[in-house]
Image 1 (cartoon, rainbow, N blue to C red):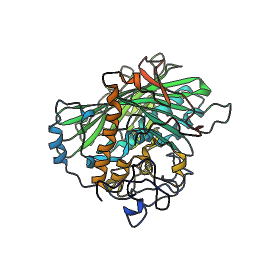
Image 2 (cartoon, one colour):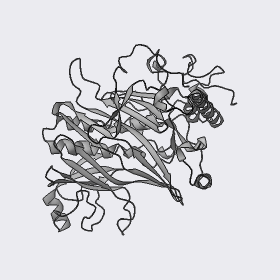
Image 3 (cartoon, one colour):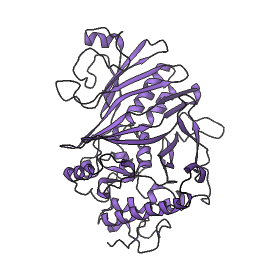
Image 4 (tube, rainbow, N blue to C red):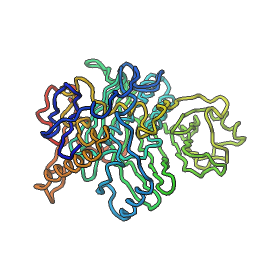
Length: 470
């Protein structure tokens, strides 16, 4: 496939997408003789997920990921020491075939936890389920060594499932900021949704020589209109170790706050090596405390697998020690072995990660939920915005294994974006660019920069105001 060919996201017989410049179209069927396999819901059975009722969502990509070499990545990154990583172009083979906006939408994989939280009568229980959701949103990161494509300024992504809908927009390029807004999608006219999940993400990378650390700046918020409550938190750092066998982990403290009742859940994501017995990766521990700092429940688990909770007396009996002087983040807990699922008597299992497909390691270690995020389905040509990530020809090319085309299309889109910016050189971005679906605000609870959804996305009838970015 030559670099002169252009890629259409439309299947054979569906026409050519206006998102690509003129040229011969490349259909899905050119990537594989057999279509990607699917499952009825694109998800495992049960309530753990957002796929129920959305039949036929694929569980495989068209082709497996390209072969990679950890050594080659290290050789490349050594040249980047001291440079701003967000401005460095990575080899396209080190990308995964989704945009960062699509990766943001993975937060909603276990959206049923927010629906469940909205039905609880007790404030502690609502916080418990919201906190479980906050941890579950990280589970799809496990084993993901690929880098999502940086969104273009003005790029959008929408996803609708039976239990939720989410819209994302790239609202800034310098710095790169992604804003999102999600709700349960079921509120009728004049009624309130069970929950609203909104916020922004500004991934700030740092290269330490032996590892790359991503600091996810931005605030996540959940509104529970029926309870007049807002919960806020910031995600913990992601550390990718690049020496030896590549691996990743989340580290740091996540504090989920009910801004109305002032209950808090403080969770410590422990780094590998905290327990000398080994096998201690990915563990999470912490407490739910009330406004008087009294410990109410203990939360523990692995962000990759499960979350449990238990009452304080049962925890103290298991440890053989009191925890009244332990920090809410459990950072100074009495020494103990890593806590496996239901290791403490009287524990309650709150969440368990869905199993991945058997050969997920051949497909970027995508979760079942992620496999369907870039799928092009019948009817999308007329339904989704011209700026939607699914229309990006570089991502589509990587997905079907056309690596040279992916690289050339990626370069073309980046050059197109640079050319658009040229007349505004020296001016601040907000002077010449206005996001379509979000407005900049200050978060009323922590006074940090935030973004407010202006509404109207799902009700739109035309795309006259959408920029030509692809």
